[in-house]
Image (cartoon, rainbow, N blue to C red):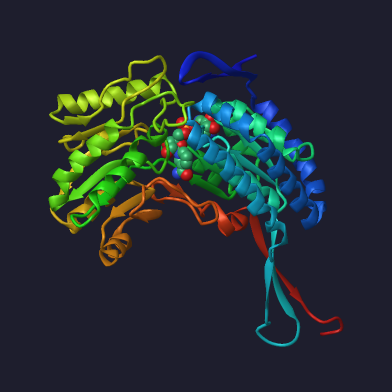
Amino acid sequence: MTTIDSYNPADPDDLVASVPSTGAEGVAAALAGAREAQRGWWALGAAGRSLALTKAAAAIEGAADELVELVVREVGKPVAEARGEVARTVAIWRYYAQAPFAASGEVHEPAAGPGLLLTRRRPYGVAGLITPWNFPLAIPTWKAAPALAVGNAVVLKPSSEAVAVALRLAELAGLPEGVLTVVPGGAEAGTALIGGADVVSFTGSTGVGRSVIAGATGRGIPVQAEMGGLNAALVLPDADIAQAAAHLANAIAGYAGQKCTATSRVIAVGDAYEPLAEALAGALARTPAADPSAPTTSCGPVINRQALERLTDAVDTARAGGATVLAGGARAERAGWFLEPTLVEGVPAGHPLLEEEFFGPVAVLLPAADLDEAVALANDTRHSLSTSVHSRSLDVALAAADRLDAGMVRINAPSSGVDFHLPFGGAKGASYGSREQGRAALDFYTASRTVSVLPAGEQ
Ligand code: NAD
């Protein structure tokens, strides 16, 4: 039997979990169990489902300390952020616990004659969820809670790097058997899930996302995919440079840059370049890669050896191509997969750091003569998820926001940062299908049907 082994990225000898990997047959059995359980779950009605989700929130909140510790240990998330993720997870369960009572349709006038036209939204049946490791509680939750609230059962295939957190989350949620099933596994399990679910929601890297979209659309089932970002920050000459540098250091180095919304390209307009380069290099130097369990740590380890080697190779080839390292650029001197927060300038055009998501605490500083050039540089990617704009002029910032290809624009705030009750997703190649979170998620996990009612006796 193959197993999934998940290790602590801050201490690679620490085996956090070793669980059997689910093959195609196991996934088929989970789907069959979910299909059976969904009938009872739907029959619970709005009050029953609301109560179950409320209890899940309370159980997760009650285990907050344990979950924080497990998140820090399994994915190396700094403890302050891990605490924030647990709180957000509880808030998402609570938010969707009210959703079963929301209106599920509309009433319309018939075009002619008596009667009623109704629209009603109904669950698809079984939602197949495929999730990454970086938000091991929040992402499974922001997919599962809305899917469950509107009456679907869920089969969740978490990332192998975060399997312990996913299993504990489902256990704590305490839902009736088969309503929320976790299938630890790799690509085979993911493929089997797409092959049997009624609706699929994926978050992860762009390459995998594209194959998930192809598999689901090939079956003609609804699918949404949120994928990688190559996010930019625009700093205008009138920005508060100290504030911008602090926000950017957070967006580059926080959680070692392993957020889909992390900043990886900093575009300094005109005279902003010199003071920003100095302030940002200083801010990154004050955010060293450190033990994620220490309360003051902002930048912990990257997830594994391959991730660290890919990052150090990219920085080395940029340097060899003429780039200058303004901050970091080397592994931290400690066991585990730590890279010092890194800022490089003069990266040659076409270098992978300007083209691909690296998912680490590394950013490229780029000059732009004016706002037009900055917007063009920011938009010069398929991976447009979140862009930040730093300026004291709201007019200029809002005008820039209108011209940016991005799912989220954040003004005088780090590109990383997501409000759980608003629609969330990227632009261009970063996103496929409808938005996640908020009310958008309730629509995604339901299909609309139109019901026509004529008075009895009408001919
Ligand atoms: P990943 O693409 O390697 O894995 C994501 C999930 O897909 C995992 O559960 C994995 O086991 C599964 N998977 C792998 N191959 C598969 C296949 N062939 N068929 C079906 N499923 C398969 O991503 P990751 O390394 O876990 O996460 C990091 C990535 O996630 C980054 O690219 C990051 O930008 C992205 N991400 C995006 C968002 C967003 O909302 N846009 C949020 C968080 C993370």
